[in-house]
Length: 354
Ligand code: PHE
Image (cartoon, rainbow, N blue to C red; front, side):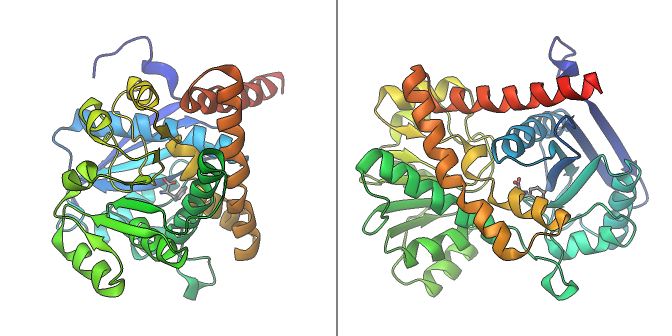
C-alpha cells in the first residue's frame, strides 16, 4: 500500500517479529480516544504482507466504530498474525506474540478472532496481562463467540420488526455462510427461534458437523450456491470480510443482510447497490458487537448476565441506526459511520482539552 493522505489515520501501527518462532504480527491501534484499544487477534495466511497490513488497518478501524456504537469505553485495535493458523501456530510463537502485546503496556487489549481461540490466548496470557476471553475454568467468561451469535439474533429481530413488522424469526429463511466459532452457534440459536436455516462453508467438515447436530438445517454445496439460493429472508456472512462485492450484490436475493464477518462490504458502494434492489444491509460492526461487548465486560468485571443484557441493546441500536438512516435519507452504513465518528471525535476533543 502506498503512503498517502490516509496513512496517518491510525494512532499507532506496530510490526513485530520473532524469527525463532516465525512470528510476524501487525498490531494496529486505530484509536484510544474512548479508552484502551480493544480488538481480537486474527491468524491468517495472506497472499502478501501488504494485504495483511491493510487488513489490520481496516479491522482496527472497524473495532473503533464497533466499540463506539456499542457504547463501550474502549477504542479500536486489532492484531493480525501472518501465517497458516493450523500449521504455523506454536507455543513459542504465541508467547512471542504475548510479549509484543505486553510491550504496548495496556494500550491494546486482545482476545480471540478468526484463526485464534481461547487456548491460544491462555498461552499469550502467561507473559501478558492484556488478554481477555480466557476459559471458564480459569474463572473468566470464556468464548465471546456465543455473545456475538446472540447479538446477531437481536439485530435480526430488529430488522424483522423494521421490515416485516414483527420481531419473530419463526419460519424465516436464514442463510449462514461460514460455520466457524460464530456461524455454528448462530445456527443453533436460529433453529431454536424456529427459523429455516441454510448453511454453507468452504470446508466440508464444519458442514457435516452442523448438519449432523441440526438435521433441520439444509446444506448447499458451497458459499456461492448459498448466494444464489432463492427465497432467503436473511443472509448472514460469518467468515472473512470483503465477501459483499458487486457480483454478490447483483446475485443475492435475500431481503436483509446481517452477519458476523467484519468489513463485509468489498467497497462502500456495494451498500447502495443493495438498497437500489430493495435489500437492507445492516452495518456489520453494529450487529456483530456481541463479542466485543463481552470482551469489554470481562475486562471491567461484569457478570455474564450483565454482558448478556448489554448485548441485548444491539436490538435498540440497530433500530436507531435504521431510523436515523431513514429520517436523514442516507444508507444505514453511513448513519452508523456518522454516529461512530461523532463519538470518537468528541472523546478525542475531550482528551485534547485534558
Ligand atoms: N474478535 C471479535 C470481534 O472482532 C470479538 C472480540 C472483540 C474479541 C474484542 C476480543 C476483543 O469483535
